[in-house]
Image (cartoon, rainbow, N blue to C red; front, side, top):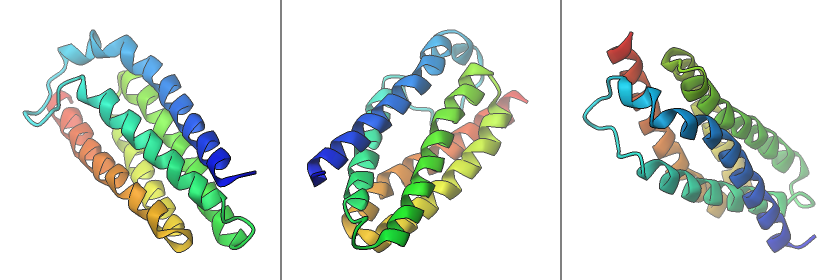
Length: 158
């Protein structure tokens, strides 16, 4: 398989997870989410799909670049892609917990685990490809911000 094919597969996979997770978000962002207290630093609703689409593409490109090195760095690539799969599953789960179950506390607990898995994926990916590691920096930054936002929403609404 070519590098381009691997990148494409991973981008589509990430976007598919994002699409599935968005089903919980879309359902409640104009109903329940409008009724809860949010901090002043909450971005407008339109910013979330723009940010997440960009991040899913970056994630997919990074994972494709790492996957392409499987023959050269088998164990490190396998470890990195394992963490990648875990963080991607946790990424999708967060929308269900926060929006689907309307539970900011469960979302907060889960997003801490998500952040740790993202960081470990970044650390493993950087060993394989500096570019793949760089592509994860905006994701780490956004989820750090989302963690603070989630925590603040939980605190304001407990």
